[in-house]
Length: 308
Image 1: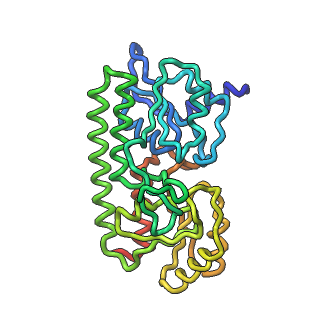
Image 2 (image 1 turned 180 degrees about the vertical axis):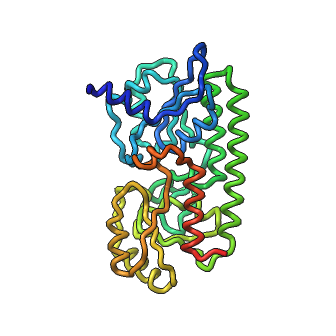
Image 3 (image 1 turned 90 degrees about the vertical axis):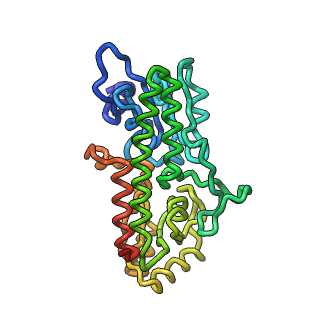
């Protein structure tokens, strides 16, 4: 099978689209990460055909675009990416595209970023201490602004569908608001208020939204960050003294550090899903959504933190 044929098979396998009538050409949308894919499907409805650029199991920060990605964008009407802090490769990818009709939308542009080293004290104080935290989608309140930007991008590519996109975005944002209330209520009364995490902590916005703190052995948001001995020691101490028995790790990456910490403390490893992307198994199930992942995370957190 040629590389082009492999690309076509992959894009069909990872695409959503409703029952578009034969007389209507769908708006062809390409997204980077899973939340943008899922939200574009929800907002676009039967007017769009959405594909995700990243194959299952691939991490977004360090993704290396392929020639087939340029081919995909040359056939698309709309490209959705979150921002340069998550997909630093997106700008170079777009520069290689020769498609005058392609609308390029930075879906996270309306959401201010926190800056820092990934610890509990990170705040957006206007100074770039290290790097900005791109994981805005894990806060259901901030996610609503991203959904609205997606609707505006779809309307730009397909003005005739603007009213439909706005209505669908409003409907989905009501689901996000309901999710927020569900998480808030579920985490309001917990024995522990600190998330112990053995990976690169993606849940900074989430933790602040719901009055939690977190402890991670990493000093940055990127998978290229390395754990520090001092933070490893601090996390071991926290596991031994807090009474918590669960150490959360990230999806997609090998939890080598988490296994080391678990071996040292007897903690049980549990995945807290950052929703960057799905595994092949999750994709094959066909029923995994952003909302379902967040509710699974809530159930795991309630158990680990001893919530009533």
